[in-house]
Length: 422
Ligand code: HEM
Image (cartoon, rainbow, N blue to C red):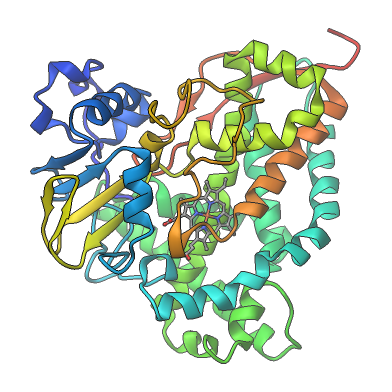
């Protein structure tokens, strides 16, 4: 997954979306998201121009689909809206193309998804639950009491990286490499200069070399349920090893798909509950709310802001003429705030009715493959937090990542209040 976003000067940003002519609104400016200004822009688009055409951006023209029901329609219509050649607004560079099944159409998409899917199937998750709980407990028990520290590094990244290492059966002592490969993939700073682009590619080539070794080992061992073994043994995907860029693409998909999203959902819980102390009180009074709260946190945060499609033919959509080849961006982050569909959509309400009916996992044939693993990790971490701590207090404003694709945090500074000592 690449993230072609505009890293514009923050001084250029206008917090008032109405100060800008409608046709000049460009929603792919990463700093709008980093500065948490995107919400008001989307509110205007939903109201005035829900199927909005941006004629001019650094990555060319694109449509923005901003209302819940419209997004469901496009996402469920893979016959007219293709996932190729990319699900990010920018197209892949011609000299470093990494095909992956999230950016493929049937039949190839279906075959590859089916091969990897048992790695996150319900039976496997049931087996993994105890391990995740044990690891979450260890991480939480090792946190400093009475000191300020960054929750993102100490908990969110650590826990999701450990989980990812498990899903790949990746050597545990090298697991930090998974975080590194995930970060170079999504960090917009890795696209700002030729030097950074080359540095990024070198890192991804190391990723490929590492996994190629693992692939050969697994192919010669009896089949197991980790992603590499599954792909290496499946008759439909065993030859992927002969197409190194496609192998790399799918590795990136499985690494980033499982990493940033869950990491940011774990951080978002801390941010959301601290910004809504009444919700934190509700949780402390009734921990059975945790599963519902997990869905609500994932809606409220929307860890992936959008997916892009490309029109395969001319389509008239809500009175607009989408032309063959046009880029169509489905802004989940806006659909999840659609006030005509979700009551009090801006608010985090941990006891919200029908909390699962959000769009953070997408719809249709590409609907998130790992949603249950993601939810399970967030649930377990909160169950373990409540066993140990009275409060995890956020002590300063969170720092958001500079991306219009990944909705996340690089810093959430906290202090822990242990039980009985409030
Ligand atoms: C809270 C956590 C997560 C969120 C919000 C999330 C979100 C998404 C979204 C929005 C899509 C695209 C849906 C569409 O196009 O309709 C997707 C696809 C995908 N996700 Fe997730 N994801 C999460 C966790 C995970 C985890 C833990 C994994 C597994 C390792 C994973 C693996 C994938 C894969 C492989 C796809 C591609 C599916 C396909 O193309 O058929 N995700 N995810």
